[in-house]
Length: 90
Length: 467
Image (cartoon, rainbow over all chains, first blue to last red; front, side):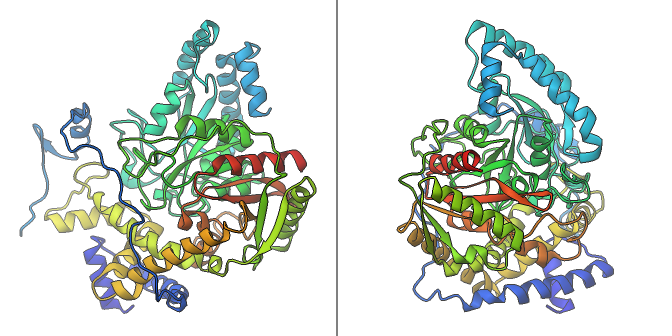
């Protein structure tokens, strides 16, 4: 885990890290991955990864939630019933 | 007072719901400043609700939890109340709806007394990773209560409530139950609806009861368990008479895997071995066996949960709810609010989850983890061909000092080695006090096969009888 990799992962994760924080996290993450690399020794040759069984889903039909106003009230910034967000394209 | 005794007093009118609430409010007034179990206390609402329930008790139409005072981990939504997840990110967030488990508690006439502290977004095993406050072990304030549902366990252990709800992703109710000397049960995955539970690891999480004894957990489970069309992962398996406990284990085969005792503190080991011997003496058949996969629980669990957690955390963007993104430019604003409002352990897990699921590293880490998890599950299914229950310690160590693990994440993760097994296998597991190590309690952990919660609870009750 080098500095550049951590910076890229932080960007994908939408985390802005300070220099101090990045140094500490880099060390922690290296230690954790080293410790957990034991997983490579587990024999999984004939094992299939995936969900066990299909889930039973409810009908795909619209139902009133009854709490739209409560959800709208949580928006940080809003205009009428719209959420305001910072500009996406610089 | 045992849960059965308390219920009997409430139903017979010898104790009113109002008096029961006042007892808990009084315990909160005398112990909360030291213990720090609660995030919010709803004393006045609890008093009003108690009046309604006392009327129902008199009229003979009260629900099965009538008058019981319950605390709720602040990761489970209660409509109109703060749902902080002990994070600055959600410090002022008000839940717009209630979790199914809360609706079911309220329908059964439970009284909710408040919301309890936890590790931020359930990321931790000692309740010191809360961004809002520290919770201390009510039995020794220098020590951690365990986590992440440490506030719920501390509230039960100090009689600030009669029982509590927590959530368990890798032992988050069983670790604090063990450290605080109480009982807790993590149900089979799919037994209790996760609707309204803020997710940490969506394929592991289960809302779970904590209580002073096995009957308390049985009672809460009987109220909250069952299929829910709002959570497609809930099972339609019939409920299993959880409250019919007799403590009779004469036909039960209890498997004791040697791996459960590897690296375990000697005093903890001794207390657990002695309780298993007592169960054998009372009629259970004890079988020594081996589950070599059990020692890999920590890496498999953590790698899987890092991936699920980093995905679950993407919704906290500072726009729709929670802490507000203030900068200009969408990416800058979202990154800045997450930097400011999330704690170190949460960031560590998000970064690791993102790393192991990137295209370059996915096969080496994430896909390998999923396969190892499937192999782990099979290993436990094979073990249950030889026995009905598995027994062993809950925690490999005794409660540590507050702050001791703050800079040592690996050490904290390793403390979950015995509890993460149930979550990886998707099976139920319960914990109850079986003895002491020094002045602190030791918890025996009992695992059951899928949907065998009643068998686990009955074994916990048997431990209460023989110890």
